[in-house]
Amino acid sequence: MKHIKCECGHVNPEGTVLCEACGKPIEQNQHIDGNDKKKLLNMRYEGSARRSTTFNKTIVDKVWNFFSSVKVAVWLIVIALIASGIGTILPLEQYIPADAISRDPAIFYPETYGLFGKIFYQLGFHNLYSSWWYLILIALIGVSLVICSIDRFVPLYRALKLQKAKRHESFINRQRLYSETPNVTAEEVLTVKERLAKKRYRLKEEDNHIVAEKGRFSRWGPYVNHIGLIIILVAALIRTIPFFYMSDYVWVREGEMRVVPGTNGEYYIENHEFILDTYAEDDERFKDAIAKQGMIIPSNFQTNATIYKAGDAEVLGAEEDHEKIGDFQISMNKPAKFGGYTLYQQGYQLNEFSKMTFKVYEMNDPEAEALGEFTIDLFDLKSEYELENGIIVEVSEYYPDYSLAENGVTSKTNESNNPAFIFNLQSPGNENTETSFVGDVIGSAEKLGIDTSVVELKPMANVIGTFAATVPGSEENQFKILIDSIQFDRKSGLSVKRDYTLPFFVIGAIIFMIGVIQGMYWQHRRVWIHPKKNGILLAGHTNKNWFGLKKDIEKAIEGTSIKMVEDQKEDE
Image (tube, rainbow, N blue to C red; front, side, top):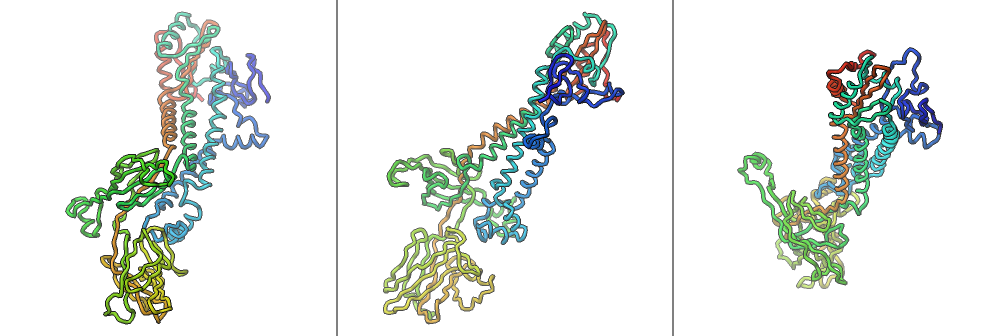
């Protein structure tokens, strides 16, 4: 590194504009000619040397200079804001409705939102805040903030720390606020010093040269802001680490105990009761909506549950070993908190298929009575069921939430939202096995243009718009299986979250606000008194609020012969 030695004896780093000690302009860095000696000094960063404006040779220098640019930081922030805005147009993957066509994002977005949804998914906006390119963008913003801060803070701190009361005359007469008084007594100078001290200026004197300073700490406000923003960005990045942030979802039926997902089997929840309260039809706020659309508008839905912690039993999840944590009434805005986890009431389903009763009939005799019946518990499914007359029904395939597509039958989820079965039926004295399909195929079949004339339909009991169908495996089928009745359960949808990053966000936000207040409500003010024969030179500088500084100087010199400073910027 090259150095520049000032006439005062101080050695300045290369690129310094104003001597760190006496403030004399370094002419080769000022780019001024003989007719421009009175041009006001550029006091930004106190004229200190910044690495980004001094070195530009190596790759490290070029990378440093790129990220130290405020324009680059602003553009990175703008790109992040635009990306975040686009990410709010469509719901993120975790907010895909439970009753969606498919909860697979590759299917949901194109099917629901068309071409825009397909582009939205392919660019990763469906999982924006954890996508690799968004995290890299956030990391680049953090790198830019760090480099911008170091590039400016270190030389500024050095320059302010090394500044002396005795300044070069050219530093004084090229300040924005300046005056020259030919004859001033020592008593008048003493009076000005005392008045400035009363205004909480810190005085420093060197060979009768005086500098009065206050509010220097306000200069660090922007850098405190940067520290707060960096903490917030770090918190956003570590949310991708499962230890710091976890978000999951669980459905729990009334009377059911399930492990809380994301807790590694440590916690269990038992749903005792789900409560749904709705607004009355004559409620003035929702009367029109209820009357016109037949809507049911919940006023409250909550889950009365107990949280347990698993013990040290050899059998994982053994109920007798559970330790009760507490009873909770989980409702909107009233979550259950335990062991660093939080359970939020987020959804519900009033008519979940629980048990289904089927009856077997002769195929060609619509008036005949049922030959037998069997009941399937969807949560305790058996492989086969034997009827009293010897007929054996084997469950060949089960689709809890089936969907009929061109490539066949599939299940969208593992929840029993729309069950369908393929049965193999074996009757006594008949060596052939008959195959039947039972499920709500009519809606999907019509959408696909499939001929439904071969499908025998029977409405499900108490289920509007839902049908059961038996599709014979061949024309020789002697029996058909129809749904006779259905039992429903109510289940509650709860989101499970664990977030250890919130304290980081809070600390970052507090530090950021401290920086805002620090830089907004205080100013760095300085007044120099430079003796010259029998008179003095008086100058002042502040980073903002020049009117306030002029008022301070005016009150300090009131009643003395010292001339009031003039704003030289108006004369330029």
